[in-house]
Length: 206
Image (cartoon, rainbow, N blue to C red; front, side, top):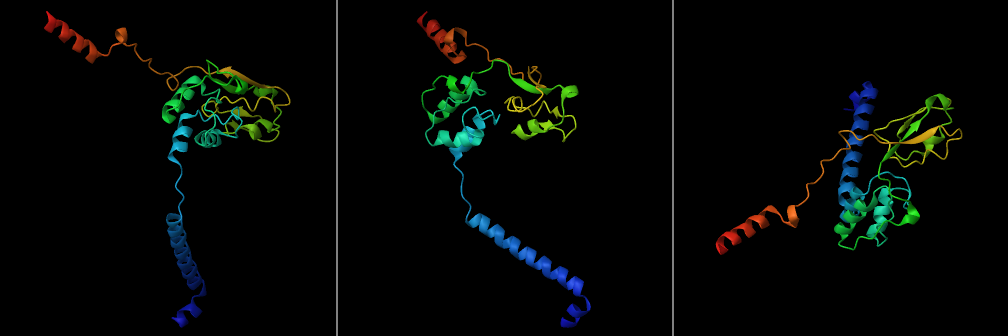
């Protein structure tokens, strides 16, 4: 064995390094499972209900920190992008009353919008790229920038930093991805089983 190590030092070094890698990998994997910290499922559920715009209008740097704060007892009505529907969903999850949106944090927009860069006016300063919390803007220094519309959350954080004011927030056109089938209204406030039940009662009475 010693003769092989002396004659093949490179192969021996590779085998030794591979062995150490496997050993340390196994130790790290064991430590990760042994000392794993379980996340709060309530925070995860609240975070899933938030719109993930990462706009900061709620006063937090993103949706996840706001979800954490809500789980700790903060108000649930600070998210203008989510609007009243998000407030209602969180209230239902936490089994608390659903307040109206706190107007101090902004107003709910009926039509969602996305950023649009007028590319012929862009000077390539990269300030909008730095401001975008979801990396939805492509470009490089002194080169034209453009917005990936499918990735843009409409937070408008890129508008103010632009020194040449070449970014517009345009209404998002409703396509297959955004369109939802409207829920049909309940007939006379009754569900089908109720109507059937009432019909049977009338027949029995007759």
